[in-house]
Image 1 (cartoon, rainbow, N blue to C red):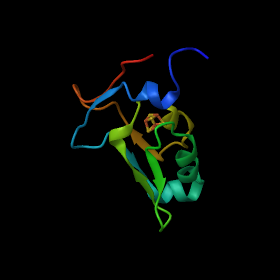
Image 2: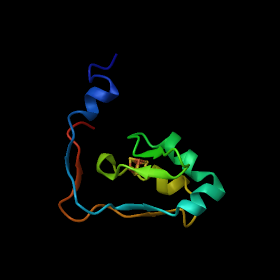
Image 3: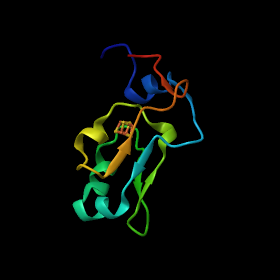
Image 4: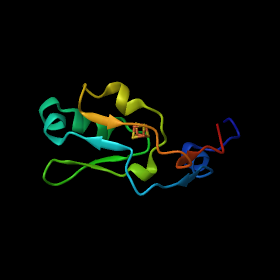
Length: 95
Ligand code: SF4
């Protein structure tokens, strides 16, 4: 027991300024061919990625923690990812 609360409690302290434009894009065909779509659904700690009924991958970019895990693990070309535009994105309140 650390006294800092569990992960959902700690994440709830963060705040977001959401841009209209997504900072994440996915090549759906390449994600399907490589299997990376399913990988992204499993590894994102914020559950940004979801698999749609047709097998395509949905992106809830507003929830992104900007941790970079998806970009580090996806095959080259599957993701286009950059930090949100200046002033947008997450502000961490708990480390
Ligand atoms: S940067 Fe982190 S939180 Fe954001 S989509 Fe990728 S894995 Fe998820």
